[in-house]
Length: 126
Length: 111
Image 1 (cartoon, rainbow over the protein chains, first blue to last red):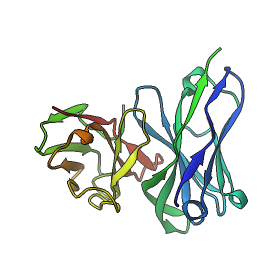
Image 2 (cartoon, chains in turn blue, orange; image 1 turned 180 degrees about the horizontal axis):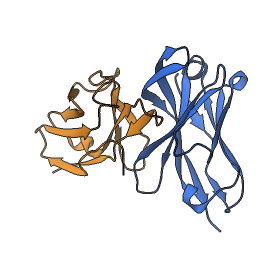
Image 3 (spheres, chains in turn blue, purple; image 1 turned 90 degrees about the horizontal axis):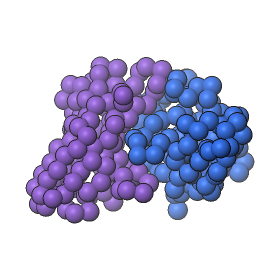
Image 4 (spheres, helix red, strand yellow; image 1 turned 120 degrees about the vertical axis):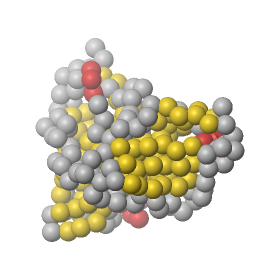
């Protein structure tokens, strides 16, 4: 079965670090990009960035560059989203999703998100 | 402000058809056929309904269809059913450094 399973809900204080995970089945992970999408309370979807676990090629939306770190360990088919210092405004649901892409030679067209994780709720509050 | 513009809400009666628009620019919708539509019920995970402007993934009802004209993509739902009540998001590839953009979402109410 094609699926992505995310880590559980987190409650953190401002300034703390956090890494959440997204584990994929082999057929949802190998040969694909994995993206992260933020949904703040009552708001829409925001694309944060994506990683190709095969070689760790990572692309970020400018809005999230420097704010988070996306990484992956292909040996355990797991992608990660990491914050070094959380803010209250980071409170949101974070989804990982299989990012379909075509291209090569460094130029890729990211055309859809076809398999989604169940979402991880992150709450940052003092 | 989202990069793609969608109406905040639309409504229709059971059995009717509705269309949701998604307006972008020549950097995204206008020059690339990489437009997707997602359905999200309250408290649930987004679900892919349409990709590449008009392609339905396996298992998605043929009541859902997509199209594009110029800088505007559209999602049409025919034969509205109560279960279609949800928020719909469009997204597109963009040639800008953002790479992928979403619309702000359209809440569909089935009257």
